[in-house]
Length: 120
Image 1 (cartoon, rainbow, N blue to C red):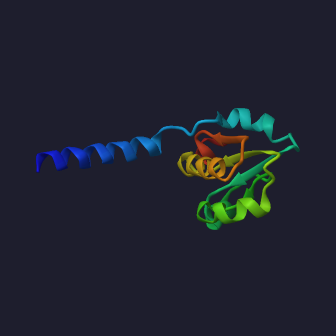
Image 2: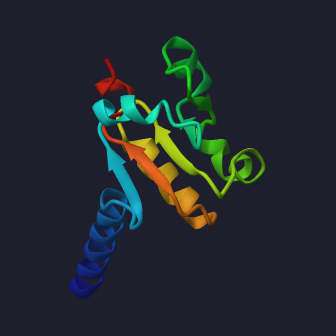
C-alpha cells in the first residue's frame, strides 16, 4: 500500500513539473521587448484571454483567440510560416498556448512573460 502512495506522489509531481517547465523551442520575451516586436508585420500576435478580459484592456496588434478555442482556430486563422507571439494576463495561459501551438506544428512561438499584468 505504501508503494501506491509513492507512485501517486511521483505522478502528481511529474504532472506539476510538466505544467511549470517551459516548452522547448519557445522563446520568452518581456513586455519591454514586446514593444519593439509590435512593429514587425511578419509576426502574428495572439491574446489567449477571455473575450471579456480582452475587451477590458488589450494591445491593438493582438487578435483575441481564447485559450479554449486555440487548438481549433490556430489551424485556420494563423500561418505556420510566421512567428506567433502569445500573451495572456500573467503568462500562465500563454505558456499553455505555446505548448498547443508547438504540438500543432508551429515552429516559431514566443511567449510574453508577465502578460498584460506586466504591460504598461
